[in-house]
Length: 352
Image 1 (cartoon, one colour):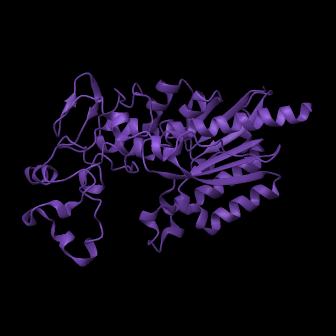
Image 2 (cartoon, one colour):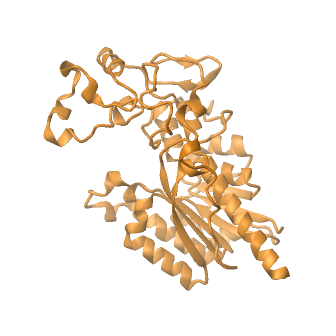
Image 3 (cartoon, helix red, strand yellow):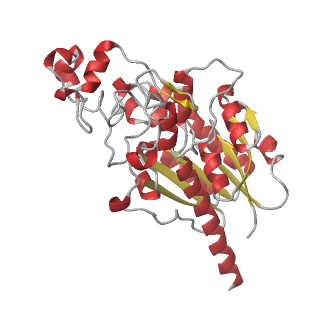
């Protein structure tokens, strides 16, 4: 089969790139403006990281990277904050610079003219006019376009996360591969992280410096000790409940300060998954929040993936953002396998 050569826009620390590589796609380079991602991207994937503002990037410069033979693929995940549920109530979100990054992706597709395009994002993007415009423009350029609301556990990803996956091809209609898991055999939290060494809040595992977690104040420690897996802060004694949760506006936020459940996939990993107070990110049985390594594993990064740049001062917030913003590696692999399946079917159809 002809080789697929891909360039990963908005690559971050390489979740999508790693998954594509695992699927057998030849990734040529990753592009991102955030220089703090370069170490993890390059040391784990052995692929050049191009620190570049997408708005300044040209199709001509990208085309110089592709070899003359093979199928050109352009993939990426434009930052999704403007389209996430957390910002849907923000009336000024149209003014945010990140809103325009999808237009930049479209511009580069027009200039590069790849055979295959893939984009991963939040499902709520599908409800936006900008997405319909994006799909229409691809159709006008001659692409067959399909988009999917992917339930990640159906592909072996141990978190209850839904993601938009768009696939487009100039050759023929392209589809995502069939799910490989069903509700009865989803990969669970205990399957993914149950083997890791135990930690107390604030500890670091000496055998793995990424297996570290945030420290707790005494009152937070009391709160998590009263938290039940899958429960809420309503399980606490009255004196431990925060004032904001006693108000009518805060009573609906039941998942914050919650514990995960061993027997289910985890909640969606966000950029704050290491913070017990921002979601159901309490460990199922240990009195602490998730460690950075646990978050990375739930994002299906290999357990050996190195995020710690020795040239930079360690920051749990920066590493947490890197992990939470990443495309789950296994979802990247699904995208890569879907592209390769599409090309095999197209080649077989031509031979008939």
